[in-house]
Image (cartoon, rainbow, N blue to C red; front, side, top):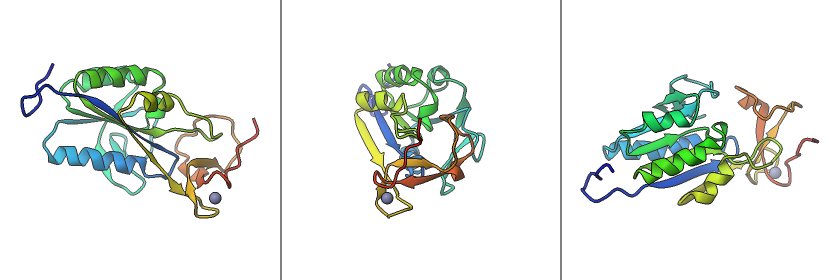
Length: 189
Ligand code: ZN
């Protein structure tokens, strides 16, 4: 196992930043990773190939904060690419599938701090795996909220504004708006 910078054995852990669209998940991920970089920790940042918003090789939040990242086709690829990292950031975790859970476990087992940001519910308001599974095994959980565009209450749902049955609509952030539980209208299945 890789030695900690101060010589003690490294202890890894998993942090999950979840919430709906427009809740600031990526911004929070970038904030944590930048603090680690300031402390001269080796940081590696990953996002799935499926997320083509904004820059192809950077994690970018809606407010244009950016951090260079590696685009990977599967969670498995992260294992190799993160070998030297002390802190591993993963954005859009919901797109990696069930494999992400095991990969995060292994990385944390190796002594790394693993921070995953992702949607915890899909457009129907249903749990969006593997984020629920990650929440169960994480040491630290942060659930962020947007603000409901209808009434101003804290919003945890992503209301799809067009009628489409695909779970993922790429590059379509403008086709969603944040809604609270009272104002959210789940689509008929
Ligand atoms: Zn509302």
